[in-house]
Length: 187
Image (cartoon, rainbow, N blue to C red; front, side, top):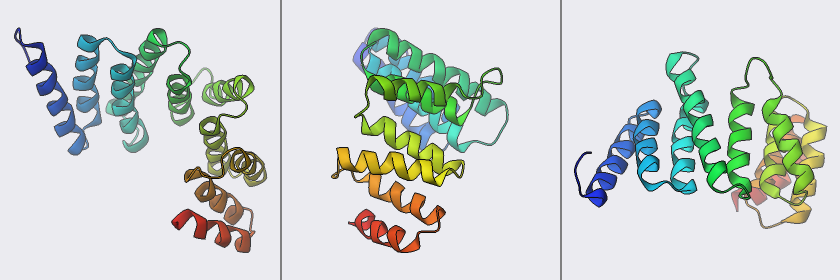
């Protein structure tokens, strides 16, 4: 991972990140992805680092490695935003991180960020679907259904939306509608 051949160094860092990711050591995978981002200096590379750490946030139990991943993921997504301030996806990723691991001083930070993004881009189905998914997670099935139906109208070809809608309708006890959407989800 050292030397004058930048291409070889990057290839090795990416390989190391991939190996650690496959071993479910997300802190190490993110660390090596972050090293790639420091060299490449692109929003995409920083976003990959953030996503690598972010997987650890989603899958690791509470503890020091998860907390390490939270801080590093946030920093990586913020770097991606600083490079591409108009790219919504980096802000969505940061908001999703904060929804999964809310800061103790602002437990609604991720939700507030998503709601703000939804105001700016009301037809962004990625944002709407994430808000719907979070509503399902918190048992707010009617709110989830309303959001996801809106998303489905905007983009009926989005493969994620009928799957999420099926879960929302199931949670709301509307089993027939859930089954109908589950069929679309399989296709």
